[in-house]
Image (cartoon, rainbow over all chains, first blue to last red; front, side, top):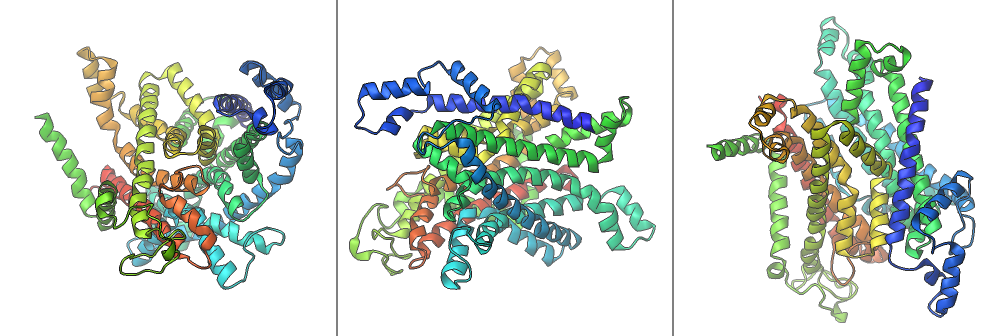
Amino acid sequence: MLRYIGKRLLMLIPVLLGISLVVIILIDITPGDPARMMLGTQATEEQVEQLREDLGLNDPIYVRYGRFLWNTINGDFGTSLMTKRPVADEMLLRLPYTLLLVSLSLVMSVIIGIPIGIYAATHQHTWRDSGVMFLSMICVSVPSFVFALLLIRLFGVKLQWLPLSGVESWRGWILPCVAMGLGLTALIARQMRSDLLEIIRQDYITTARAKGLSEGKVIYRHSLKNAAIPVIMVIGGVFGSSLGGSLIAEQIYSIPGMGDYIMKGLSNRDYPVIQSGILVISSMFALVILLVDVIFALVDPRIRSQYVSKKRGRMSKIAKETEEIQAV
Amino acid sequence: MQKKRKKSRLYEIWRQLRKNKLAVAALVVLVLLLLVAVFAPLLAPYPYDQLNAKLSFADASKEHLLGNDRLGRDILSRLIYGSRQSLSMGVVAVAIAATIGITIGAIAGFYGRWVDNLCMRLLDIYQAMPMFLLCVALAAILGPSLRNAIIALGVGTVPGYARIMRASILTVREKEYVEAARAIDASDANIILKHILPNAIGPLIVQITMGVGGCILAGSALSFIGLGVQPPLPEWGAMISDGRSYLREAPRLTIYPSICVMLSVLSCNLLGDGLRDALDPRLKN
């Protein structure tokens, strides 16, 4: 197991190197001069040139890439061009907000989405199933910022139960989490339903039923464990998309998180912020995917066997194949 | 001879799809939306940028069926013209993404070995960035405009298509008809395009249908944060963003474009769902 985790951690390194390279190239082809933007239009050409030299913007791209990597490894994420504050300090302040927002909405959607999915699957071919699934399809199809605005209108403006924006108190967190969580809930419910239906059709479930087990035992003891695996995979992916979605939720509810920081960095061409921000968010995402895969391996004996015995038996070969298929 | 067989396959899918009433309804809605977008100048009662200060925030009336916005522009006309921008974001972005993705996936799946490995590792890097973050970053870096938003969405959503293409190619690569084509000395491009692609396209059709919905959704989000369509050109996401400041006084400014986004995305998803069932051989009665 440790070997597996270690291997996966090592595989992370080229991915993160690649991301930082992509970001550097993107910034390099960006029109607009950060030095000019910092100094404003009144600055002379010499001043701008001097600043470009000081910031190292005139160096060739591989020098800048090397420097960025070296600094990042040493924990130095640079200083923001706009606020002149170290990016690392700022991110440490902001990251908890984003992580809390994303994980709260994720927890909410798992707690609500999974039972809904089970309910729908166990009531297949009834109006309950189709009603729940149609409702969830609508939730998936509405942009989260529309939910955010509607919730503000209903609970903030009309009923005045909850604050319109800001997260000074815990009550401020409710609306952003619900707004982000609604779509995710629907997504998880749909996945849960289709996986459970897939499993229920299997032979071993028929066997379980044939030996006279109660329906509850069939579902909760025999089906759910197997159906949970793809759902866990989806939750990992959903985490990534909600990291992206937090860009918008943070804007609407004025939450001082990473999304807000990156958006400001993008509009100011504040490239140290953009570079480090995207790198940090992507590392978070990659770590969560890794965590999901580890859980996945722990839950699924077919995959675990691959790493427990060094002998590559027939079972592990099958496990590898299933892993490959599921990775797709 | 070949044409006849092709027709019957399409007909078979249609026959399966027809049983799913929701999917057929979704198809009808999508066709209607496309027609609205194409014939927008004929359908819209007013030009989308016709200002009328007197009618600022006017309620629905006989002349203006859905009322007017802050600048007195007719909301219905803006919705109708907006469908052009919103739908083209979905359709064109997916066309870009699917073309690149299918090419990469086909090459990776067909040649295998190091080519496959290289492509997959590149996709790993690609996918390690949250999709929407990548689209936002691309759109911001290219500069806000409809064209750049489409490019950002198109480039940002490539990996899904590539992976699905690769997976389905892997399942048909070893089939006898591919070997037969190879035996008569067909070129690689020929084998991929003529023999493998038509047999591996099923899952892709579903992904493309749903992808259009996804791109409409993401595109409206880009416009919402000001990185997509620029005023005065109307777009649903941008209209929602405009209406946001008047949520208290005139919620309809937000609600009407939201309904349009929802309707188009919902139709894409329902149609995609229906197609998945129609293409699934296990569900054939």
